Figure 1 (cartoon, rainbow, N blue to C red):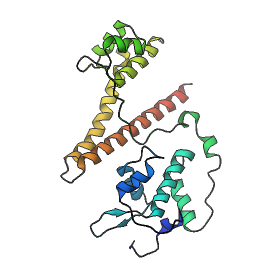
Figure 2: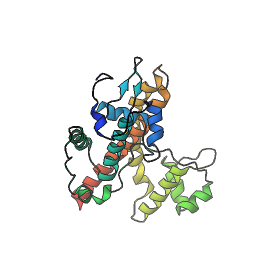
Figure 3: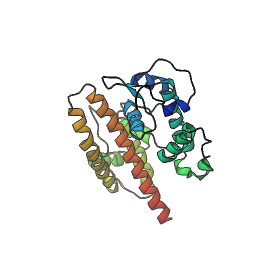
Figure 4: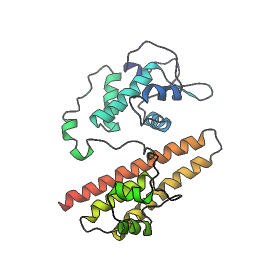
Length: 247
């Protein structure tokens, strides 16, 4: 699409033309309402045809006010109505053609309670936390033997004599599972599964990180956090489906 041709995205937003924004400036506009937004998320939505920014002669993306409002609408439909991208594309197509979009009848009511709080599109970094051994035991409510077992199976790992936020969550979960008779040795399968998922992420991220282009490290980090979140979403959905069959 040329820069002078009519743009479908102008149907959404309706704002008067203004200066064009870089992808970084678009992030600045949206991150307050959508903390999980990222460069790669915007590029993904572009690849799916949900937004069509202009391109400079050098190939850089330039977003109009209407493009930003279109992105905002897409993100709101995902977050607030749990609409899949296909339905969002149909919604936008109706707006572009001056039609009334089909109402997502009952979408919030039909959404299972388990996914009322949708999974993040990116896996946020763990909060910085450094706990001594005694502090971890107290915060997690576990005894020395369970903590020693978790260490022995590689489920928690002390660095410089301190445990982090993820170690605390693992210990807490292990303590609660212990009440059902599930021991630390039974949890090795979780570590193995996590390592396999990380192996899949690594296959994608390592080539991205090694690319000689500027910003490759940032793109690799974005991809890693998004892939990890997708793995968690898939894992949760599979467990939920299995639980439904079990119960």
